[in-house]
Length: 460
Image (tube, rainbow, N blue to C red; front, side, top):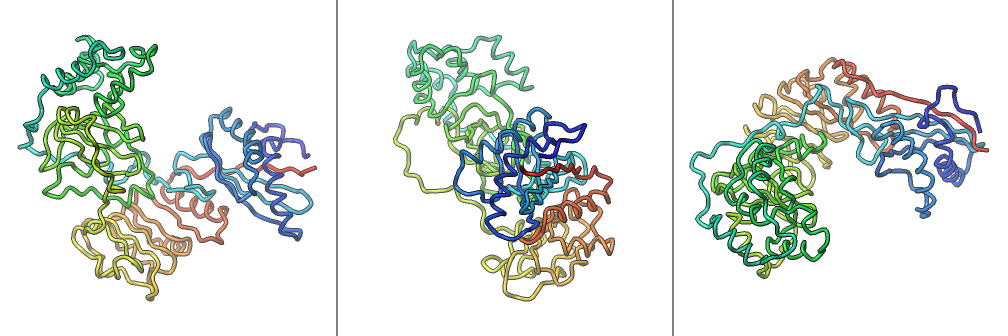
C-alpha cells in the first residue's frame, strides 16, 4: 500500500478508502482487460450510493464504515468520488467534499443544483400566505367542549398532565404569538411531555386514541413555515403555489400560520392552520405530508371536530392524495404530457419542463416574453436553438444537458437573473466533466468552486 501524504487527513488517507477500493477493483477485474476503469459514488454520514457491488451487503457496509467515520471526524456532510482503477491494483480517487455553493447530487457523484446566489431558495419558498380577511373559526370550534371531551377520555390517566399558565406563556413567547384557543385548551388538559408517561408506556396509546394523533410536547410545538420544509432546487424550482378560489388550504410549502402539534405516526405532521385558503376556517387542522413539497391536506374544520371523531371508523383509504395534474402554472411537455411548447404557452406559466418525444427539437418562441416563466428544464435533444434561452429574462432556474450549457457559455447567453442552475448529465458523462462544467458556471457568478482532493494507492 502506498503510504499516505504527509498532511493527509482521515478522509484523504488511502487506508480509509482501501476496503471500498478492493470492492471496486474486484468489480473491474470481473470485466477483464487492463483498464483503466472508472467508477463513482457518493457517501454521506447516514447513507451511500455506490456502483452495483454484488449482493454482499454486510461486506459493503464494512467497506464504507471507515469513510463514514472520516466524514464524521472531519465535519464533512458528504463526499462524492470518482475512482480510476487498473487491473494491477493501482487506484486513484478524486474526492469532491460538500460545497457551500452546491447541493448534493441525488444518489450520484454528479453535483446537484448550483446555488448561484447565496441563500437563494425557489420561488414557492419565498411566498407568504395570501390574506383572507373574511376567514373565521368553524362553527364546530368549541374550546370548552374540547377540554371536557379530553378530560372524559383521560380521567386520571398517566400522561394527561396539563400545562400550567407558566408553561403556556413560555410556549407563546417561544412561538412569538398567542396559542389559538383550541390549542390552548388541548394543552391545558394534556401537555404531552415525555416525562409524564415515562413509567407508563400505555399512556401514550391512550392519548393517541383520544386525539387520533401522536401529540407533540408543548415545548416542541413549532411553526411550519417554508424554511421548515426545505427542498432541493431541482425539485423545488419545478413546483408552483396553487390556491384555487374554492380551496380550503393555501398551496404553500409552509406558512407562519401553521402551528404543528402532532404526528400521524407515519412522518406526516398535523397543524392548526391560522392562514386558511379562501374557503377555509381559522384554526382548521391540516396534514403536512412528508412525501410532498408543497401544500397540505384538510383533516378537520376545527380541532374540536378532529377530537370528537377520534376513534370513529376511518373512511376507506382511497390511495395516494391527488396531485395537480393540469394547471397553467406548470407544464410538462413530453410524449405522454402536453404535446408542444405552443400548447403549454399561457400567461400564468411559471415552470416548463421539456422531456422526451419523437418529434423534432422544438423552439422556445411560443414562451418568449411570458411574464411569469421562471424555471426551465430541457432534456437532451429537445431544443432546436439553445441560444433562445438567453431571451428568457425572467428565468431564475435552468437545468440543461452539458452540450446546451456549453453553447450558452460560449455565446455568453446564460440569463444573468439565474438564482440556481443544474446540469443533466447523460449516462456516458463522467462526473469529472460535469464537475468541470459546474465550476465554469459557478465562476461566472463568483461562487466558490467544487474542491477536489486526490487520494492514490496500490492494492497489495
